[in-house]
Length: 242
View 1 (cartoon, rainbow, N blue to C red):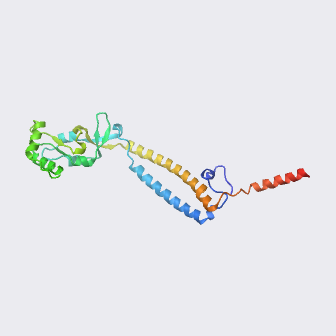
View 2 (view 1 turned 90 degrees about the vertical axis):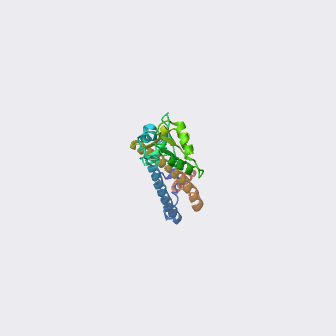
View 3 (view 1 turned 30 degrees about the vertical axis):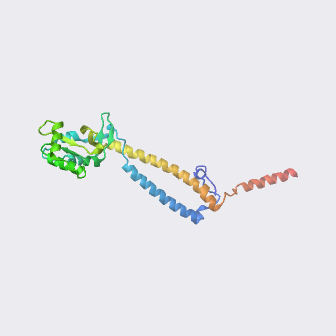
């Protein structure tokens, strides 16, 4: 079977010396490979769609800040965290240098922020008791700690879960990526995935044609095109002898 100059076959190790299309095992491998490659590309497309950009302040829109949300909250609401979690976007910690650090929603959902700690001192004590795995936290102790940190008549305070206890109230935000940054991240991921897929195809094709086919069909056969050349050489030798 002849080759073409623009054929990628030689780069992939394709066997032109045998008619692979007539071999049942080659047809089976081909169907399995195409099916598997299609599934991989589908999975990569899904990952590309789910890909997020790096968390940079220029690529995100801040949809809510917990300190501002608490300041505007209705004092009649015991805990504003559930309402804050309903804001669009993901949770994060916005540092002073502009970095957006990860903040697990679980840690924030286990926290307590009240717009009037004195008014809701009993509810706060119940929450702290539940968070303490049943160890009762007296209301008097909670009231004493409130008065120790604030002398206001209706202090707005938060009790963060242990996972974010070192964080500042002003650092807790909800954010979402801008459309431009989101699509750029998806496109970048997909282009890289296609590149790695083509590299994997190149390697696997060489392993198959140079390895698997070699084991099943044997070594490459000598090209028939060399036979006429050998005959011409023999004829030339005979003329020289005459």
